[in-house]
Image 1 (cartoon, rainbow, N blue to C red):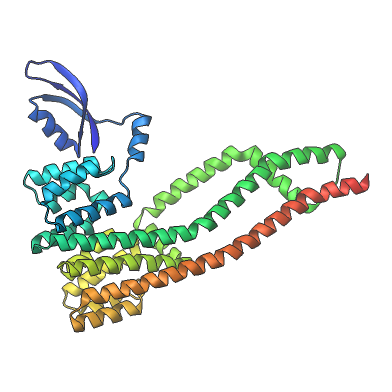
Image 2 (cartoon, rainbow, N blue to C red):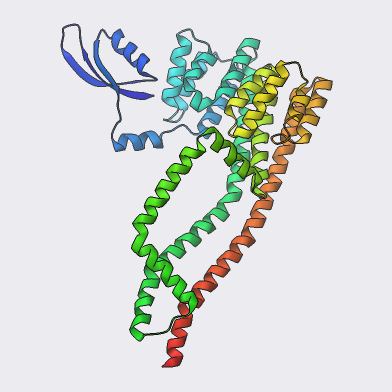
Amino acid sequence: MKKFRYKVRDKQGKLITGVVEAQNEQLAAKLLRDRGYIILSLTVSLGSFTQTFQQFKNRVSTADVVAFTRQLSTMVNAGLPLTESLSILQLQSTSAMQPIISQILADVEGGQSFSNSLKGHTKIFGLSYIALIKAGETGGVLDKVLGRLADNLERQQEFRGKVKGALIYPIIIVIGMIGVSLVMIVFVIPKLTTLYDQFGAELPLTTRILTGISDFILAWWFVILIILGIGAWAFNIWKNTYSGKRKFAAFMFKIPIMGPLSRQIVLTELTRTLALMVASGVPILEGISVTNEVVDNVIIADALKEVGKQIEKGFPIAFSFAKHPEAFPYILSQMISVGEETGKMDEVLLKVSHVFEVESEQKVKALTSAIEPIIMIFLGLGVAFLVVAVVLPIYNLTTAI
């Protein structure tokens, strides 16, 4: 929900200012007109820092969506009407979800279908979620679709949690290494340099390198920050271009261990979502089109788009996937071929999704197993370099005395 600052006149001509909450400017204007106001101005309220922080704090998380879907599925399967289920969830949900559910409930009570009421919240629920709900409503199997959707979201959340959990340890170690190095360079080395200068000691090469780095960072830290900021800004602009997205995605795929892992993660969620759509009655072509819009990798998204075009022209689904080996492994087209022949596409896609998930978990373990010794080697080399650079001049001074 956005906040809009308004300036209006009431029926008596009195000037009134205030703030109104709505999904967009058109709905905000409608709310004010329904109150009998004549709108003079209507602008988005930027809010204070506290309001901005509160909005960030109360953002809807994936866990909120998973809990909402599971609870709604349980209630609908128990025979409760949709509006009554939403009313109960409105009271039980988190503060972040409550206004969203309130708006959905108001839309449903106003005559809209459940899927149409979700379209105003695509950033929260996603296009595939809405497409599945629409398929469930059309086929009269909303209860079954909600159950499958809840299972799917829970599996996705569990899988992502495993990946993130496996990568936390290496990330913490790297951040710790960087932090210790900066403390040494900024605070420790300058004091030691002063001590060496007072005794007029001849410094070894390692110490001269370290003091040179320290002096450079202390003298030009603001320039370094500006360069890093401009570099990050330029990289972000380049990465948001189509060419930049493709080149960056191709580069990520080529990184040993990490590249295949990122590809497997995307394929795991892609095939699982397609399996759920097909099982819920969504045509495979529509499922591919929806999935193409939500896939977070431009190479796979472009390949899916081409697959959709090939299928529209009458080519077999397996053949269309096999035409893009840069995005889809051979096992995917092979399994889809089995699904086409047996008529059990949803089961086959679910099985291949499980295969990708198992392979992803194995790659995560391989990644952490490879990263840990590499980090330890670099950490040992860094500590050894610092010890030699710091201790050796002190040793030379004590022996000289």
